Length: 495
Image 1 (cartoon, rainbow, N blue to C red):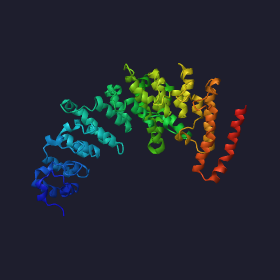
Image 2: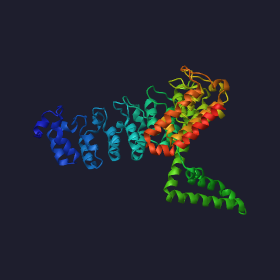
Image 3: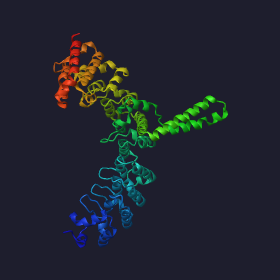
Image 4: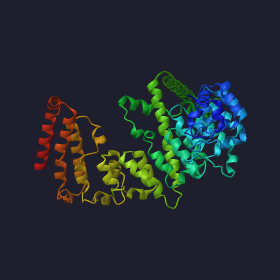
């Protein structure tokens, strides 16, 4: 049997949360009259914890974005100065909760009542704006933008005791990381321009800004797998149609008026206008072109963020903690934009090694990162031979690593066991031509030469294919190619 009102009012802080079921239900239903009946019996119910999560009446009301009228009446009865003290069991104040559930109307009401809520941290040391940014990525960034503007408007309050500035130190780095992770590159770029010191802050336990942008793979064109048509359209899409046209139009006004007979410049102006209008129509009516344009804008801003961070970090005396993880990630995941920018800004980064002691040359081959490998072959000039002659802890040279099986995700980029074996053979041949001839017969700790390691692929890859395909299909589709590849391989060995 549900508890009566009298039993609820007897001890509002009881741990028997079932006694508050009626109150919670009334608030969730938006039944103000019923809720008011409970509040009038005992004012403590207005602000006490009502469930095992520590939610109070205001948290429950905020949980329903359609419950705004109820929330407005509730806020009239709660002392606005007490709002920062109304936290749940995770130390989330009402504004934290509004950000978590993406309730923009509730957030605006709370900030109007008490802007101090903006600068309080919860048990995770997160501010309401942190909750807003990583909850906004699933919908849109409207709520996050509001929190950003509100924090800037009331920033002087962050200087008070117990308050925290969202644009400084740990909180600023966390905000930048969340913004990049959520894909809001335009806002992240603006943050870096307004607060450039964030780029060079290293907080133990948090990712550095350089690592954050490095691990956001969709920030780079190289991560996209466009077909020929998409690459063609992408390459011809202008980055900023409107701004480009307006700027040139303003710059050329005086020139055109001073030289009315300049038919060449007039013709160019007309063609440029047609060009702009053409792409405007395409972006408006062709969804896939609009998507490609959004990608191009995203990639452009992503590179600007990378360049700005590298510029700021380069001013530090020691930058290894900033670029190390980013560089290793770029090599393993084959991101040439990242590798080139980091090595250009931090030449010493080329000697970075992962937890297993592998460096650029070894990682690029082990992970079949062709862009990273090409960078080594064509761009590295300093101590290049040292990179080529490296051995790992098992005395494997680069050719041994090329003979080992590629990571499964790299193998899956090519369909079919025969084509996978062909790709592996191409890698082996490429690295064989790179290293000195005297290293081609080196033995590792297992007394295996590179060709002995590579021969294992002829067993491993077909077996993997057999587990995925019916035997009849495998024999029909793969065997002829396999026979040709094996024969050509052994023929190559004998010559």
